[in-house]
Length: 332
Image: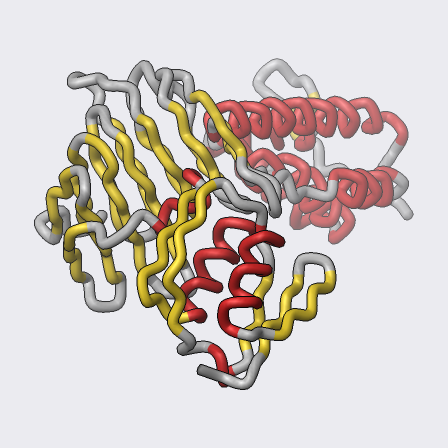
C-alpha cells in the first residue's frame, strides 16, 4: 500500500512531516497552522487516518490507567505493529519513540497511583490479623475484613476505611482525630478502644465502645449522630438514616476478639451467630431448635468443646464437615 504524505513547507523552505506534529496536537500545544497541516494530511488518504488513530490510541493510554492497571499493553502493541507494517520504514523509529514514551509515562502514572492509593491491611478468610498502624494505633481485623488508608497517615491525617469488622485501640492524638469510614457512616475519636462491625448484608454499622468516647455519625449529614461512651453501643441504619445508642447488654459482639461469651436465656440462633463470627464457620440450624434458650458462660474455649456442651444440654444432633456444621434436634 502506498501511503500519501502531504508534507508542507515552513518559511525556511524545509519540508515538515505532519507525523512530527502529532505529539503537539495530542498535548494541545499545536498552533492553528500546525493543526491545519495535520488535518490536510488526514484528508489526503484514509491510510493516514488509520495511522493517526493508532498513534492517538497509544498516546491516550496514560489517561486510561486505573488503580487496577487494566490496560492490555500487549494488545495495544500488536495493534501498533499492524499499523507500522502499513507505513514506510523511514517512520518506524518515530513510531517506536512515541510508543516507548507513552509506555514509560503510563508506567510512571500507574506507579504514582499505587503510591498515592496508600496501603490495605487484610485478614485471611479464616483468621484474625493484628496490625500496628503508622501512628501507633493497634487494630485487630476479624477474618476476611480489611482496612485501607492513604499516604500520609499519622502525619497529615488519620482516616481509615473499613470493610468488615475490627477492634481499634487508638493512639491518643488531640490534634489529629482518628476517623473510621464504615459504609455510609463515620466514627470519630482521639484516643479510645472500640469495635466496629460494618455489616453490608444488614445495611448497618454497629459500634461497641469499651473505653473512652467516640462519635458515630452519617457521612453526608454529620448532624445525624450520637456520642458513645464506654459501655454503650451505637447503631447506624443506612436505610432509615438513623443513629441510635443503648447500653451494651453483653460483650458477645466482641467475643471474636476477647473469646469471652456470656449467654443468658439466649436463643440458639443468636448463639450460632456469635459462634460463626468468632470461629469463622458456617452453622445451619434446623428450624425446630432455633429458639431453644441457652444460658452458659464460655471463656477461651475451643469450638468443639462449646458444641459438646450445647449438644448435651439441648439434646442436639451435630453433623460436622470441615467448617460446615449442621445442628438439628426435636426442639425445646
